[in-house]
Image (cartoon, rainbow, N blue to C red):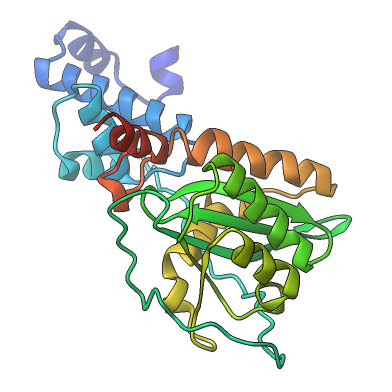
Length: 271
């Protein structure tokens, strides 16, 4: 009856049943199982390269090409990148700092170069604005703040968190865009009082803060675009979990040899 339902001849069924599975087929089945497990463990955020690195860390022997091939066969496709609008308001007459970073996104030690920017998240209650600071050395999120308004307090609160978490380092280059929040007296005073060095992107040049833009792309593609937040509090909880529990601790980053930010920082401390 089952053969009839599945449109399979009984002779073909018995031939299949009596034919033992080869070692290659067994290994392929085990590999597919591992690939699927990692893919869904990371909520469909990992492509073939990151899955390959994860398999390698678990001592599973395979090539990136084979992982890519198996993912295509199983129709496993990582979440695609989408564009989002910038939030910078640079139409003001406040003082602008020089671009000290000059698109040099290499930091050989922690607390040498920090990046910051603001983005927004849609909720049913209205916009939620998010300010983030990352350390360019490990790409770790070190400070953040969220509010329903895009004010100077949004950035000063995020910077204050970063300062406390990094034990108030001196002479760090803090790079941002030319938004009014970063030119506000309260933010500039916080930089000055903590002996931090202000750097700003050129007008309308997103490439000057490309590493920060990359983080927001990851956040939007890997989390926000798949969500429909009812309230700002719901969005906050989701975003904090992504940044603190997933991005910093679990997500492998291409810029740091596919290690996690937490692991990269730990290597510097122990090294």
